[in-house]
Length: 271
Image (cartoon, rainbow, N blue to C red; front, top):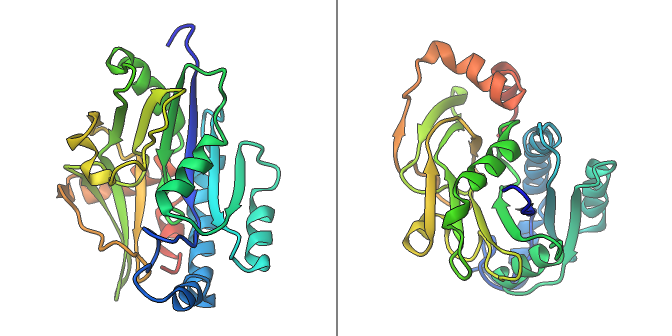
């Protein structure tokens, strides 16, 4: 985008206590809060965030982006302080605790306050707090949006989806890692580009249904992301496409080259 400024802002929801659309929202408010901030659950979320999610942001080859960690002002103070400690020194990563409100409103406010109004375009991308993006994700996303710039018209957002990635799944025999190519956009790294003054963002619709509402460009070269499958997944993780396409002997080098983490170290992480 020669002469055009495209701002990239990611959003990670870290145990946000929502009034609707949040984690385990169907139970009573007190029970919801107790489960959301339970010691066992929070230990898992911090473990995966610290070992996978945060390093994948810190290690980006292009650091010209922002990432907002949407948290809850209902979260116990010790957890809020721990998050702040983890992101200290990373000026492009911020923690935003917000009061309870409808999920989509909180997300919109969090992304809206990060906007640079001097930009021409705004690209929001999503990442969960237990997943990982490859080291060149920001660089790749910028390039893909540039290639598709002519598709972005006022009122017509463009969705960019990276459908190739890896799953790391907890089994009784330990963590297994395998490659997948999804048919529909996943929650990891999917992005939406709009004109800067438009309110819609990548969370406006369910990620799997984005192509039914918006122009969507999907890329299958990868892997671009790592998704963890464990006992605390609120969505029932299901693959919508193919798996085990890459030869097993190539997985180890592919994993380390893209994510900067050895397969052995990843498999030692308790899911």
